[in-house]
Length: 393
Length: 144
Image (cartoon, rainbow over all chains, first blue to last red; front, side, top):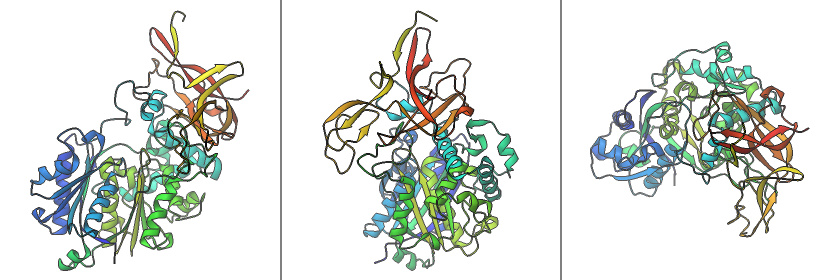
C-alpha cells in the first residue's frame, strides 16, 4: 500500500513585517490554498495548525483559531508545536489521519507575527530553563550559527567569501519570488560591508524574523484521482526524528553537548534526511532540488552535506562550481530561502513544501528548476525538533 | 568599585578551589556519563537506567572547538554594561568528559586572539553588575 498523500493546493501570504495578526495572514494563505486546490472549505475534514508559543495563549490555539476564522464547519482539529518543525509535525498529523482512513481531505496551516530583533526568552528569573541560562550569558541564536560557521572555516577551509556567495545566490533566486520579503540582488561585497553580528557572521549572513503564512490542502491518493488530480505532487516521506544520544553538536538552547563517554556521538542534522530517504525508498542521487534552513549562510553548506548532496566538507566547492544555483545540477533554496524570506517559525516548514510543490508542477516562473521530479526540505530548531519532507511527482 | 555584594549568577554551577576554577557537574555512577548542567535524577543515556549520581569537578582545561563574539547587545535576561562592550564566546571541548561546553571569554581577550584547537582554561570573572551587586560566572580564557 502506498504511504503517499497528494498535495492538491498550496498558498502563502507574502513574508514581511506587516504589523497585523497572524490570523489574517493564515486566512489569506488558507484561502489561496483552497482556491489552488479547487476545494470548498466546507469539504475540509481535518484542520491541522502549526503553532508557536507566541501564538499559543488562550483563545488562539493555532488549529482552532484558523478553523474559526475560516468559519466553524465541524472539521476535526489538531495543533502541533515543534519549534521550527511545527509545520512538518502538523503535516505529519494530517498524513496519519489520511493514511489511517479517518479523513480524505485536510488543511495544514502555519502563520506567525514575529517580534522585532533577536528572538528572546520569556521574562523572569528561571535558571532551570536552558533558554534562560544561555541568554543570561549573552548567548543568542546567531552565537550558535557563528560557532558552526567558524568550525567550517577551521576544519574544511571555508571562507567568509563562500558564506557571502550563499547570500548572493539566494538573493538572485528570491529576486522574482512574489512571496519573498527581501527582493534585492545582494553582492558578496555588500554582505562583507554589513555590520558584524557574531564573528564571522555579518548581518546579511544571518536571517531575519518575519511575518508570513503558508497553507497546504492535502488528500488521499484516491480523493486526488476522483478529483482528476492523479498527477498532483505527493508527500513521499516526513521525518521528525529526535536526536540520538549523545549529541555531537552544541545545539540551541543548550550550553553543553551530551557527554559521549558511554555512547557514540551522533549528528542530529544528518539523521533527519537519513530517515526520510529511507522511508521514501530513494537516495540523494534522486533529488532534483532542496529547500534547506539557511538560518545563516554557512548553515546552508552544513545542510547540503547533511542531505548528502556532496561529501562532508565539499559543500563550499559545490557552491563555487555553480551546482547549487538554479540552472545547476542540484539547486538549493530556489525560493530564495530564509535569506530572502526571514523566518516565520510555524509557517516556514510549510513554505518549504509550497516551494517544492510549485517547482514540481513547473509553476516556479523565473526560479524554475527544469525537470524537477523530487524535492527535499530540511529544517531544525530548538529543543531537539527538526524535520525533512520529501515531495515527488 | 568596592562595597558591592559578589555572588555567582547561578548558585552551585561552578566553584574555585586550590587548583583553580572548575564547573560543577555530575557523573552517572552506572554508565559514567558526565552532566553539565548537573543532572541528579535520571541518566539520559537510553541504554542506562541510572538514578545515582556523584558530583564531579569538570576538567578545567580543554581545546577550543569553535568561537564567536556578541557584537550586538543580547536581549534580557542578559545584563549589559552601559555602554555595551562586545565580548567573545567560546565552545571548549573537554577530553575526559567528551563534551563541549559554552561560555563567555574573559574580558581581556579579543575574538581575534582565538584559534580553533588552542588550549583553554576556565576562570571565574564578573559577568554583570548592578548598582549593588556583582554577578560572577565561569568564562573561558586561552591557557597560560
